[in-house]
Amino acid sequence: MTLGARVRQCRLALNWSQAELAKRLDIKQQSIDQLESGKVKSPRYVIELAEALGAPLEWLRHGKGEMRLSRTTPGVARADGSWVFESSAAPTDDVAKLAAQSAFFDLNGEAYCLVPVYDARASAGPGVLNADSPEPLFHNVFRKDWVKGVTAADPTDLAVLRVAGDSMWDTLHDGDHILVDRTTRRWVRDGLYVLRYSNEDELMVKRLVRHPSSGLLIVRSDNRNYGSQLTLPDDEIAIEGRVIWLGRNLG
Image (cartoon, rainbow, N blue to C red):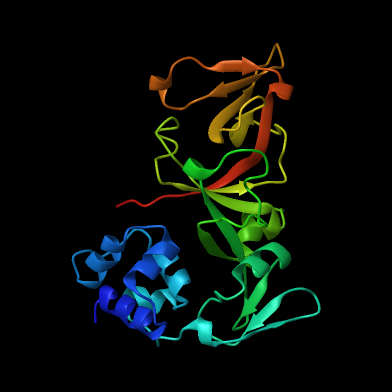
């Protein structure tokens, strides 16, 4: 059985149309049709696909194990705020509740967390990278031990942003996913930050460097074709978070 056939099996088991699944993934229905018909062998959004269907990723990718749809498996809230799921698949019901209220949840003895994913093209204004926002594209699942290895921030203070444009090429490509620590609202060291200019709403990812003599912040686009850098005082830059991880489809 192909990946497309397994996707169709899950979709029909959930009584979803191709249009419904495509809507949940923020893609065109044609993409689902091409996948299920075998015209697309390895979609870049396979992780998001497994999450949307509530199916084990390894089963969806390679047919290993069994198809178990987590939407049929209830979760139990514990006193410490975490959740326990008796299933081999990641939970998808009450996703917003888990992402906004619970740090981690247990799944077959392993601890995970859910982090909302936003699209830079559709995100603007203060507070857009917020787990309580009603409009994330979907949620990514991360292991607790991995998260703890890259940041001390609570999972409820993390967000994933899908990069738009090529202003940060080669560092960041259009469509890359970056993990953002929203607890960092000021410059702490040179690096990549999600920011807005204080008088604008457009959300962007730029490199911030502290000027050694003036103490001002240098705002850079890593793509040299984007012209000269800006040098601004801290109060003219609204930092929404610091980039701590990059995910990329290598094609």
